[in-house]
Length: 196
Image (cartoon, rainbow, N blue to C red):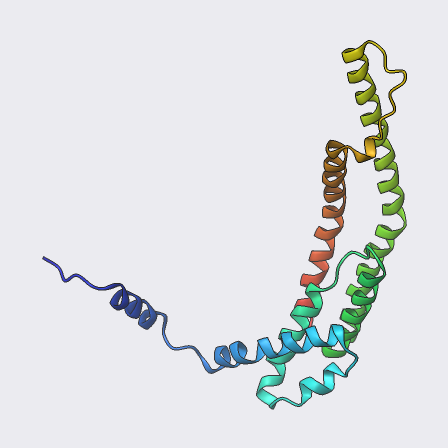
């Protein structure tokens, strides 16, 4: 009969099979979180991110910078309001300062700006049209339901915009609409991450 091993022994064997982490992996694990913290602080406070990163040891700068860029990319979002617009500008400025291929970064940023512009202009118009269409459809359905129930819809005024079903449908419609933009934006963020 075979030897019965404890959970700890099994875990230790698995760890041994993985092998020792390389120096590069250790540096990455240690310094990427430092960059993430700096980027988060940079988005809230006014300070020179590049200068802060350059204070690190030469070996660590790449990992600190990578961590910062990752957080800055994650914070680029659809310009739903003024706060989002300011955060986008700040994140994009930070990324441009940290990346060495400024032309490549600017090319991706021009695509990102087109998405933002479309979202704010045509997207807003499309959302308004969709909202009005949904409102008209709901109003008609509610009037038909009232007419079937009571025989006449006259005298009943229902604010469909306050109905939970209407609000839920509108949220779903908005999510579908925004998902298209978010998908394209995510592709551009991946492009940004790949630029040196």
